[in-house]
Image (cartoon, rainbow, N blue to C red; front, side):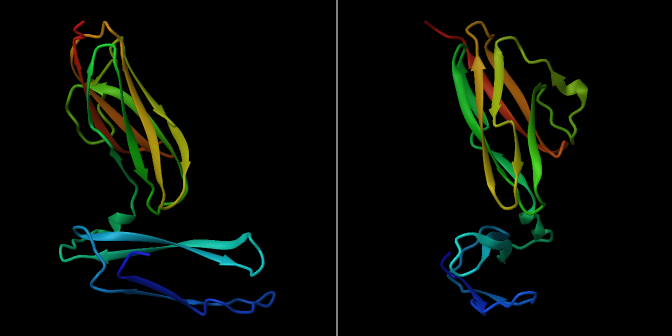
Length: 204
């Protein structure tokens, strides 16, 4: 548990009789030692309910705690929304080389869903999604992009990493190639990120 974040459950242990409902109070306290970033920081707590003497979990749930800072702005609930980031948004290669980066997808608390990716080349403009067809360019021969995994089932409050491999052939013309990576949630485009691939001529 982070310094400055204290959690207790009352009662945390009791004798449960069949066909009865039981309630425990969860108390969360913060102290000035707890750090935050910008408008706030989200802490996700995982709660398990077990029967004594059994290794199998009988119940689980998540608790989201948003600690607000002085810069808190309206819409702080956005901390619970899915979002993704590229580890590197620019790759420089000589023609014939292979480059790598990865995309980290944080699921937030919107429920279990299928995540997938679309990749295509663009002119350099980025408008509102979906991207207009006139701004999409065909992928040049000699440039290929692979994302693994390209499709997965995402659960609440977890991070998923997809490995991105960019391959170039020795005859790929030098220049800047801007790739757009769309993130789809249950088949619907929710956001996109740009990956710039700078290719220089392979000097032997």
